[in-house]
Amino acid sequence: MKTLKLIPFLLLLILTSCSTVTVYSDYDKTVDFTPYKTYAYFKPGIDKVEISDLDKRRILRAIDDQMQAKGFTKSENPDLLVNIFTKSREQVDVNQFTAGWGYGWGWGWNPYMMYGGQTTVSTSTEGTLYIDLIDAKKKEMIWQGEGVGTLTRNIDKKDEKIAEFVAKILAQYPPVKK
Image 1 (cartoon, rainbow, N blue to C red):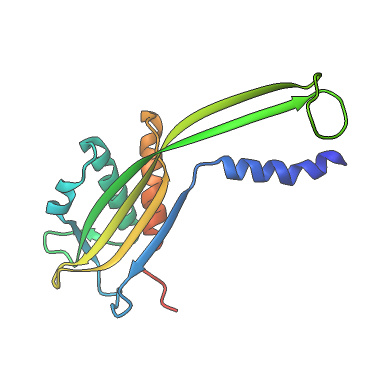
Image 2: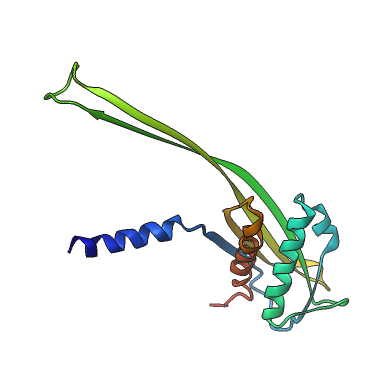
């Protein structure tokens, strides 16, 4: 019976330990998104992004995959221009565990009280990816998606992590009008 009570707790622990990407989006509510069918990259903006060319290509490939899955085609004369922007910050987590043990009652000094403790410090990098969609004719941004999550330096997981960021961001496009 105790095992059954632990299962929801273990599931919660597993879900919270998985790395997730939190997404947000904003858009121009006056725009009708249905006529947009083609896209291209906004090269001047993409060139300014301060990340490695390898990561930049990973992001652009992931965007291509998602846009094509949505029925968009790349074009020399596009309806939409796609721009990206990134930022990152180092996250430092300090965890301190202190345990006291011994015996005695009440407050005050206890000669039998001993303390043990452990402090751990871990760092991670939190990254933010912005994907901007710009009306190519009007040169106005009509939609922006943002994804925030923990980045990895593990080369085997970079493609997967970047694809997760892009997929979750572009899942918000086109916006559902309420």
